[in-house]
Length: 200
Image (cartoon, rainbow, N blue to C red):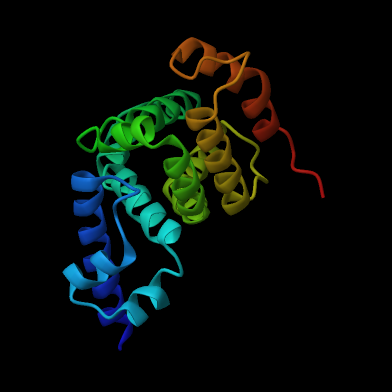
């Protein structure tokens, strides 16, 4: 199977998985049913997704990613790196409601299964989200908002990890749904680090 055919098969499997998740939820979605409905052998399914958590995690993350182009348009209309970071947390929080509220429903109805699957999916989310933020980190360097010697790729990955944490992991001292609380956190900790000269 060529690379393009494998990519097409992967997308077909994710389409079917997404349909089954919407209809049946995580527990009732099986690898056999996904393979059968997609018209793919189980061997190919397991070659592309080694287990159910990998498949479900990829489907859940893809749901989040479907909003990213719209998110680029939203961030492009915002001035300043700090404001974009704050908006990024709000976008991340909103992502659980956005695709037909399915993510929120699955998280509420099957929290253990959702947590396991999304944890597997997040392995691919960090590089993808870092690539998403790459342009904004580069712009912040050009605009003098962060240190000129900042390594764009490394900083974009760190920003991605910070945003995932702030958007998905509750804490005692920061309310991720309160923009001013998020802004205060960025001003106290994240932005000062990015404005400093990177150490070796």
